[in-house]
Length: 199
Ligand code: SF4
Image (cartoon, rainbow, N blue to C red; front, side, top):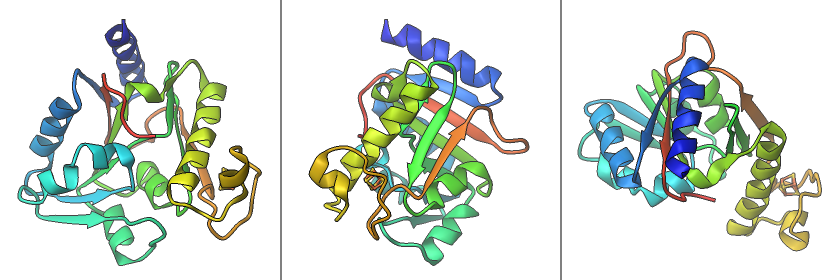
């Protein structure tokens, strides 16, 4: 049943100009990423999905150079990642009608998905799929609350469990992006994985 939904979503992304593929397992998706990364420079957005696939360690011996973003950092590593051959990230939510939603505290991750790297690959677990765009925005905000908790940020949502529209220094919600189709001239793949991955 879930594979049917992933296949429907894959077709939707392909009709919105992305290149989408479906994978039964995270391992299969990781092998595909390794194949596409060989000899290239590779940038990372901070992502629990990518961490759970152990991609930094798997790619290290295969690629030319890695640029790894650490939470709260916004320096040369992040700028170099924006012009890497390949950029790997996840999304906070994707809707069945083909929208990709991301909330970002630094902006480097969402910037890379709008313009910069030679190719972007989204790695998205089935738990990120929502019924429609409003539900995707709700899910993305819930993910931000969970992320703030995960990093023990001094934000009001960590105490109340819901977004309080804060302006705290530790806020993880500076920029929200919605991709409704692939931006012109960019090379963006959406890998849909039949496993629960990330927040
Ligand atoms: S309270 Fe602040 S950090 Fe928490 S979800 Fe809302 S805007 Fe983001």
